Image 1 (cartoon, rainbow, N blue to C red):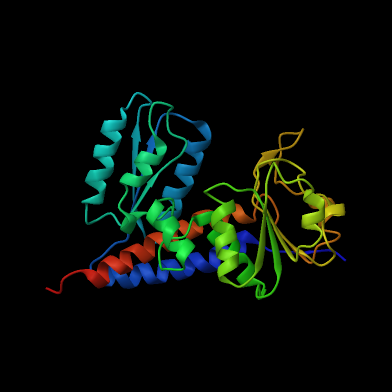
Image 2 (cartoon, rainbow, N blue to C red; image 1 turned 30 degrees about the vertical axis):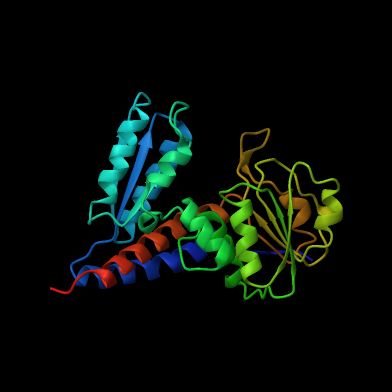
Length: 288
């Protein structure tokens, strides 16, 4: 058996076409969905991510503002900038690119973003909404993973899902989303005593730790669905994930590739969240 690929690029194009259509409908009402991306410092990887985010917005009918600041920017200056964007009606989503320079408290900055504009889904109010099953913005990477499962028609009810990783950005929200779809969820991490014993029981495995080959073929139950969130480099410097792709694809029923899997979906869900924020703002705007 060779696993079917879940193609993140193809799924992204479908979802982005829908975003463009809904953005055009808003524009007809005189509203252009707007995303502000704030970058502090000169982290190379962050610069690439930010460029991709801005370009994706522009390609799909959204308005994007990129604000770049020196690493010397103070926390107070950044908080003031966030507050100004909170009050700017042309901006529907605010994204502060992490990591921030060491002298700035990232959590404080995230909490300063209005929950109504928290399109990254990192605000404590967004996390609370996800935890309690209320509407809010879901973090883009796990949200993209859910869309990938949906795209293959996978029904999670009663299935056992194992999430490897417990970060606030992927692991924890991923577990909550799977739980909402009535899966039985196990979260594994660096202190898990026997990872293989857990993953062998899983119908769905989401690997999100940022460590190469954390999941190998002998750890996967035949026919399981494997979602690889990892972004690493192999000895040749080629991009690879957390999963031993060649080995696991011989055992799994479906698998996401790296690159071309979860990566494109993350930015796509950012567009979806920004559009949704603009639609909500439009619905709440006072009639003229």
